[in-house]
Structures are given as structure tokens and as C-alpha cells.
Length: 267
Ligand code: B12
Image (tube, rainbow, N blue to C red; front, side, top):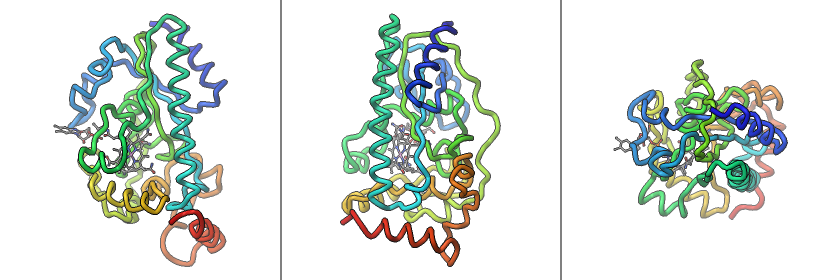
């Protein structure tokens, strides 16, 4: 177990302003924490047989931009975070390669376009399961991983490495409050009240809505991560009251700002 290499990796992430880092040993995929679990061909050691650990990083989505969704602002934020995730995981893999540990990053998404997803809605590797096994958070009713710092407003990237790094403990505290805002407010009615993975999204409804927004140049949707009350970022941005997103007269200044942004840049 290379404690020293893990410390060097943590230091590297700090210097790159990567706020979330977790490590999972690949054997964790072989002990499913819940069912249905990801099939064996999706495990990191099936995709890259030399893998012994998976390093997962998380980058936050800033709430004020997400609040305007669907909008060009959230779309650009999403694209920026995606580019950084791929670049940072590529660089971290090279950092490990230079220290004699063969490593490779997995793309943060891994599909050609929404048409490909409508035909086959699954990617070759799941980052949210990797992030869970690396101790970064717990699943919410909204089908994604919630973290203490950013709730679900975080995107993940993973590096498969042959290095045997000390794994982080799984998170035990269930972060989802089951307020059901994500279920009630989903514009595609793609979520139900069951816990993940039983309450799995209606993937085709979610993807079809995303495709419609994409035609207008303002995908993705993101409502299920916007309305989630979990996450310390809500305190930072002074948005502890998640009821501001319900229809009505609350927060008129914010509402005017969101409408303004939505009026520009899309089709
Ligand atoms: C495809 C995809 C989508 C599709 C489909 C969504 C969906 N509900 O699955 C679309 C485009 C609609 C979408 C939407 C969103 N996405 Co998306 N998406 C992905 C992507 C590319 C792949 C997911 C995947 O296929 N995983 C692999 C499979 C195996 O996992 P799974 O589907 O959960 O599998 C379970 C079941 O399907 C079942 N199963 C699977 N195969 C089989 C086979 C058999 C035989 C059986 C029995 C069962 C079974 O068991 C599995 C385990 O429970 C990932 C990136 C990635 N590569 O991980 C991002 C990702 C999941 N998305 C993300 C996000 C944030 C979103 C959105 C909020 C949009 C946005 N960016 O604003 C919404 C949220 C939708 C929601 N509430 O679920 C983030 C989640 C981050 C987090 N905090 O957890 C990810 C991880 C991207 C990233 N790099 O960060 N997404």
C-alpha cells in the first residue's frame, strides 16, 4: 500500500484546486453494497485488468448558474466542468505513470451524442458508482450521488491505476432527506419516490427531454440537482431555503434574474 503516493496525489490535487478526491480499491466492485449492482463487465478491473485502485475526483457546479437552467449559462458551466474533469484526470494519470504506476483516465461521460444514448442508455463505466465506492457520498432519490459539500452539484471523473493506494472509507451517513423535491419538480416526470437503485430514472424520458433542450442549445436540464436541499454550497450562496424554486411569488429578484438569463443565447 503506497501511503506516500496517496499523499503526493492529495498534494497534487490541492495544487490543481480539485476539492474532492477519493480512492476505491477495485475489489470493492466485487462486493456489491446494493442490488442491482453494475454488471461485471463494467468493473474497472474488467475494463483495465491491471487496475488495482480507482482514483475519483469531483468538481462542483456553481449553484447561481445552475439556478438559471435551462439556459446557456448552465450549459457553459457544464461544458467547462466536463473539459476540466477530462484534463485533470488525464494529468493525474500521467502523474502516476511518471511514478512507475501504469494508469489511464476514463472519460467523464463516454457517449457520442443523445441519439446514441436513446438507443443504448448506458456508458461503459459508471463514475457515480466509483465515487460512492471511493467514499465521496451516498445516492439520493434523484438517482445521483450526494456529497456533504455540494449535495448532488458535483461531477466526477475517474483514473484507473495499477497503484495499490490506501482506500477511503465508504460514507455511512445517508445524506438524502427524502424531501421529494426532485421527484415533484422533474419536468420530464422521470423520477419516482423509491430509493436508488429501485427508484431508477425513466432514462428515456430524461434523455428525450435533454434532447429537446439540446435542439434549443440549452441542455442539460439539471432541475433534480438544483432543487436538492443537501450541500454546504447552499450556505455559501445563501440559498438554504430550497422552497424558492417552487412556483409562486417567492424570491422575486432571483426569479427576474433567472428569467433574464433564460431569454438570451438559446434557440
Ligand atoms: C447516461 C447518462 C445520463 C443520461 C441517462 C440518465 C440516467 N438516468 O441514467 C442522461 C443524459 C439523461 C443523464 C442525465 C443526467 N445526468 Co448523467 N450521466 C450519464 C452517464 C454518461 C452514464 C451513466 C451510466 O450509464 N452508468 C453506467 C450504468 C451501469 O449505471 P446505471 O445506469 O446507474 O446502472 C444501474 C442500472 O441501470 C442497473 N443496470 C445496469 N445495467 C444493468 C444490466 C442488468 C442486466 C441489470 C439487471 C441491471 C443493470 O444496475 C445499475 C446499478 O445500480 C454518466 C457518466 C458516467 N460515465 O458515469 C453521467 C452522470 C451519471 N450524469 C450526471 C448528471 C449530473 C446528470 C444530470 C443531473 C444532468 C446534468 N448534467 O445536469 C441528469 C440527472 C438524471 C438523473 N436524475 O438520473 C453525473 C452524476 C454526478 C453525481 N453527482 O452523481 C454523471 C456521473 C456524469 C459525471 N461525470 O459526473 N445522464
